[in-house]
Length: 296
Image (cartoon, rainbow, N blue to C red; front, side, top):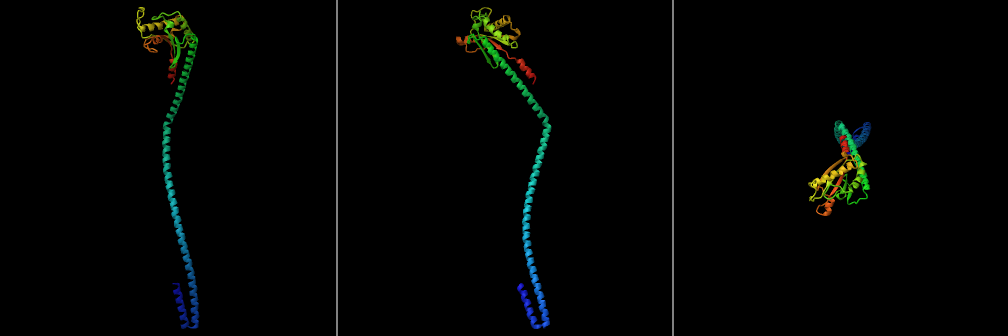
């Protein structure tokens, strides 16, 4: 297009030389110079316009890319805002529930904690009482063993079983065979036990009579059977402890067990001899436990 314009101008110029006067030729030349100047100016403007257009297109593309990037960032931020808003609503709901729970259950929780504290004190009281009882029982056992230390262990036995103190005395140390009449050595043995029991006035005890399984033959008419024999032996020991050693009868209980609580098999002579015994049971001090239970 540029070459066509230039060619046209050349033709006009040649025609001018051949057809016009020098004055008009000069005018035409001036006009041509003006046109060439205008053409050059237009070319410059065209190039400038093209450069601006290209720059504008480039800037537009960059702007569009930047706009797309910013829009993408905005979309991501909006998603994050929505997520945070939803989480915030959930947290607020949970806090509200916790607030309601705290208000409704705070008093209950406090009472529960108070109850736990009270139960803990109660348990501590029980443990203290148990420890004291165990200490008293151990001291009692040591004193009994010390008092009867010169007697044969096979004839008298002192032990603690499930927190209860037992003193088992063989019938040959206390009674004649098949009788509730005491031997000459009985008071010596019972005197040693009575001395220890007298030193513990707060302790109650039970005296039990035990027999073997053999039935009485040709015995005194005062004894009907093993039940009767076991009871009479127990009451005999209780009377000696009361009358001879002045133990408070309120502390004592007499009981007959007959043949029904054997230590071992009654099938042998040794077994029967072991089963024939008088047992002194140191009774647990249940009143202390009842007092603790009342304090719950």
